[in-house]
Length: 298
Length: 225
Image (cartoon, rainbow over all chains, first blue to last red; front, side, top):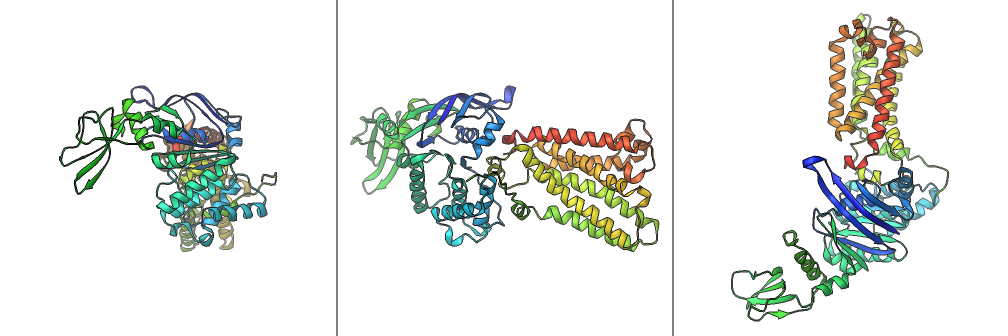
């Protein structure tokens, strides 16, 4: 469905040139695909290229048969695209219904009755039916995000690209939104870009990790988790010094008996009472970044 | 859910139109409407009327055109829509042009009602060209410089500087063999000159060059995010 070959993107020229993406190869099939990476990894650049907004410096991107290098193909492709940008700007004086309706018209939905039905449907899906007539300027950050999601879904897109969609959502909204994305992914490509590891682990069948413009990993979240097998430890100590020696502290917890550290690294055997524990996706991510020499980004 | 019957989202375009873009021309319309009444019976009334139509309105158009594309809170979403760049540019500039055209035409009707004639500028068509040509030229300039700088301010400032430079140096422009073809206000201040038609053709040609360049810049959407 989405085929990316040797994709590169450079901003600026000469000494000030910045390579945002470098030699990306990816194939993304129907279903939910997660793109994970630290801030500044190039995720948003990749999302914008896949949304037909940014142009690659090199390589090829073909989505659902549309070659995004061609302007006409890019415009046609956008009719079947749902896009939720990271920085979501809106028209504050429109109501939620008006905003979604406006976006639906721009997306080529020209039959009023069908459009109205679909707008009602997506507003219901994101739980905004009750406040659909209220102006967006009175909405909270989470509600605005939901309006953004509604507009992305309004044309029943075959490709849905969501960039950091859960930013600003409360835990309940996050769960609800994640479930919604999984539902939608049954018959389309849903591309979720995030730096929240948990969001990927809960929803995606396949994923990629992007760092400094390069793909570090492609595979399933389970395989990534398995990579950290035998490399995750807990150590409880009363010492004020954090464990080091090639170990990365993933989390710490203050207990009555001291501080409990969760560590990722080759071995914590030198620490008294170190216990090897079952890894999670976050541990797999940390181990991968660490073994690829990107620890500073963690 | 697609049909060939296109719905033009005019009501939403108007609802999302920034009101200050309407308030500025409307306020100046009101100001000059008062001035021509205050000066009625004097030459200043005619001077004020032609200055508003042929000099002030084109400047406002140029400044508004610089902001037309880039001042949009939902710009990234707009770029993700299946709307070709030329259509997006045309829609936004058309709205600015419509506001200016309404101001120019209603002001002429108003002048007619208070008995002030703009006939020294020529026929009805010549009077329309007197504001239309510099308006299109400055709109194109404001838009293309704004897009080239990826910010509206350079576009608006360039329009302001060109406008001011031409006003201050009008004598040079009118008397210079080359400069006279680039003088924006010939249809307003020197309608009697035989070079007027050629001047208007040159200015229109450059307006087209600016607009085509603006379209080329619009295709590089990522520059504006």
